[in-house]
Image 1 (spheres, rainbow, N blue to C red):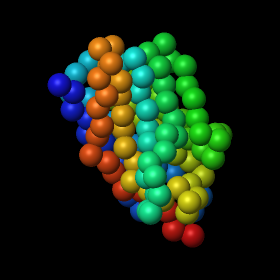
Image 2 (cartoon, rainbow, N blue to C red):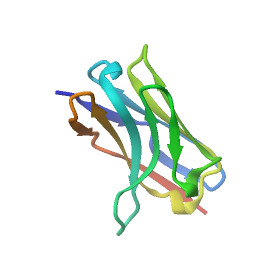
Image 3 (cartoon, one colour):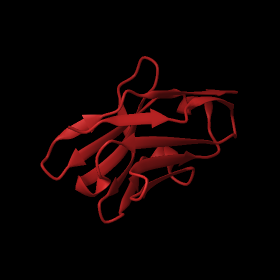
Length: 116
């Protein structure tokens, strides 16, 4: 069983930055895919960034060049650095992992609010 706990959300003005962190209870070496999703108010959850076990990253077009996903094997964390935030980035952000046994786990989510 894997537990994921997100932190780092909050309120920021447009143009500001936040860094989200997802702490995993188990070793992230067993995760073959790690990602950050978000769910804006009244909308569906969407994948915004992912990183594979070999470090390959992928981003949603709307966050390319502004967000960066990374993993820290020593700390068992998956981080999301968010720069030049926009009001449309307002959402609940979720961490998700896929293990090498094809199980998927979600964190509880953390709120990010960007004001104009």
